[in-house]
Image (cartoon, rainbow, N blue to C red; front, side, top):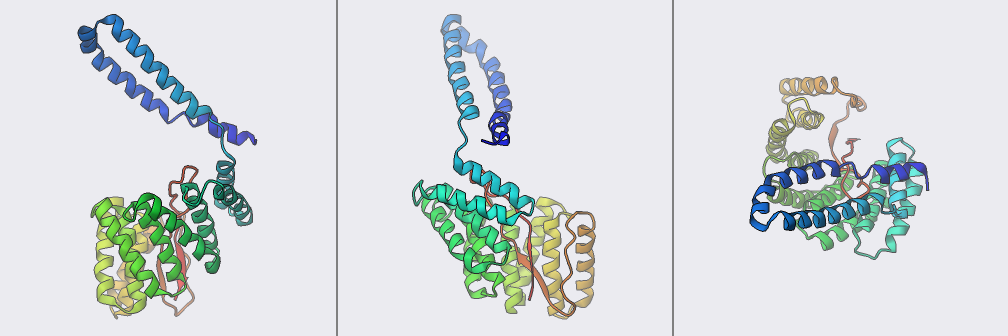
Length: 308
């Protein structure tokens, strides 16, 4: 096993240190009352027993062997982050093969399908990506329920795949469903809600439904500014979509101001977006929300730029 994976196992206990400190704090707070109620001896035995259990849990969590699936998944992540997409594909295919042995409803299978689908999507291999993202969504829906926030993220990813191909009729209902889930599960001020509003607004801009698009983009901008701050890159992305809308509705003066603000935000960060070919309309509604990490959590990822 590569040395890096022993280090992963060794340092996986570090997040437990604050937990241990909190347990000690609680212990000191409740100790006097319990000692007076049950006696010093009984309290000492109880403390010893609980300490033994907690120590066992920490040791098991720390030194449990890393599975082949976790290794392949981690190697794929590293390769993807370094731009080695061929190596990422090889590793994630190996992870998928391992995950298939866990059963058709295992969340690790959903993770592997999602990761490969995201990789193919980011490479423009839409035909290869679609069945993988659909498969991941189906597992999420069955295992987590149709209204879980992770399902909304999977819906978003599939919808952006359709958007990338100009299949707006297929993308729209998926974004709407993701929007409904997030409004209910996350509340009206969560930044993920802004992402969904922005994506759906992009669909409406592309379809020429400008009134509907503007309402969504206004809401997305307000939520993102409040939740993330006025100079966050996600705010710039919404401003860019809004700029396209303003130009499409012959409001050039407003568009220039909004575009200047977006460029100012990008000028403060490392990800200055590329300009599209002259004379084209560039929408940036496509925000797949990334691959999933070692435990299956979603990893945020950058945007995908399309010229329509």
